Length: 263
Image (cartoon, rainbow, N blue to C red):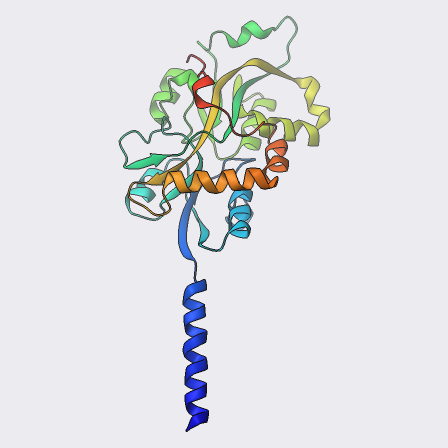
C-alpha cells in the first residue's frame, strides 16, 4: 500500500513540475522577408530572433505560423497567429486591433537598376514610364504604401515576385526597369555574387526606412511592452548584436529621431 502511495505521490509531483514548466504557446506569423525571415524549400519559416527568445526564457514558447505578405491580414483575422516581428503598423495594419512595440531595428529598401552609359542617380527621381519590380503584398514608399496589385500594375507597370532573388533576376534579364530590394538582402546577395555588382546601379536614397516593431493582438499575453522588455534583456546579454550586424543595422533606435522618406 505504501508503495502505491509513494508512486502516486511521485506521479503527482512530476505532473505538478511539468505543469509549472509548461510554456505558454505564442503563435508568430511569418512570411518571406529575407534576411529577417527566411522560408526553406519545404515552406517552413525561420526567424533567428524567435530562436533567441525561446532559448532566453522558459515562460513562452514562440511557434512560427507561415503566412504570406498578402494573406497575413486574413490569417490574423481568423486568429491563426497573434504576434508578428519585423512589422510596421503603416503596412496595412491601421484598422486591426494590434498593439505596437517601440522600434527595435532599422533598415530600408533601395532602388536598383541596370548600369547604362550616361545613367546617373537621377534615374531614380521619376518612375513615370518605368516598369517597377518588387514583392507581391509589400508596401512601398514610391506607391504611398498602397499594396493593391491592380493599382501597382496600372500606375507603375509593377511585376510582383515572391522573393528578392527573383526580383533581381527579372531586372538582370531586362524584364523590368527598377527593382525595389531590402538593403540588408541586397548586401548579402552582392557579397555572394560579386560579379553582378558592376552590372547594377544602386540608389543612394531609400524607398523607405524600416522601423521594425512587434505587432501584438490587443489584450494578448504577452503584450507589446513585455515582448519589448524581452528584447531589451537579449540586447543587454549581448546576443542581439551579432544578429543586428548580420543585417547591417545598429539595432534599437529612438523612433522619434527617425524620419520616413517622402513617397
